[in-house]
Image (tube, rainbow, N blue to C red; front, side, top):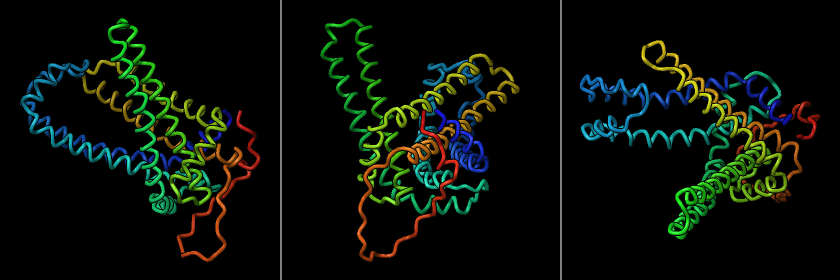
Amino acid sequence: MNTLFVTLRQTLGSPRLLWLLYGITLVLGLLVALPFYNTLKVEDQNSLAFLNLLNGFDYSIYSDFMHRSERAINPLFSVGRWLGGLYIFLSVFVAGGILLRFSQTRPRFDIGVFWQACSQYVGRFLRLFSVSFLFVLAGGGFWLVLGTLMHLALEDTLTERGLFWVGASFFALSALTVTFVLCIGDYAKVLMFREDERGAFRAFGRAGRLVLRNPGKTYGLYLVLILIGTGLFGIYFLIDEAITMDDWLTILLMLVVQQSLIFARVGLKVWSLGTAYAIYGILPKPVPVVRPTVRQEAVAEPLPIAVSEEEKSQPPVE
């Protein structure tokens, strides 16, 4: 747990990085929100029914609106899907810059070096993302398919409550498998960054062995960060229930709360990757790959990784 507090201080000590990532997220959100808002203004035909949505979701209002304006709204959903893919790409793209930030000892954030690190590592991280995505589909999908088959087999035997718990159990197994794969993916990024590894499957396998040998210090801390993120969503929903958006002041207040949650999620992502970087520096390393000594083709030199005195003298993770 000591590592979590150390990396949290490092994360909070990089406000320019956090604001940069938040700004990218905000711009992507506005690319969807502004056209959607303008379309709604045209299609609502000055109806007051939408004001009822401020007090909670009403499916009848949504279905009536979509029945009347579906042809105008569907293109916006398509744009949203494309921007969702762009957001995933940017999340992979900035990982190299985030890792470089945690490897630096100097406190000043250099945006030029940040973009250089992002572009240098994006290719190998995209290959790693493809590998991780395959394992997510295989691992998470296995439990979902098995749960569906069990539900069908026990449909005439168990009560509705029993069927619910069967479904919930397999869904939990699927979620644990997916998060475990994502945890391995983070450590594979760190391995590729620190050891200049270019093989996505090889890095994922080595990171998997590292996580399996140290589940409490790797996946355990990863689950702690997930629980923190879940707690933030819980606090948001409590605030949303407590504040009734019936005037501009309360709407503005909820907007501030929503953006604060988005900023916290950005910080949580940086914190998670920084924690993986710190933990990797403490744990026994996977067996390194023996590199040939013959002359190879010239490749881009990896960015230097500075190891601070604090990291060298850092106590073992509790």
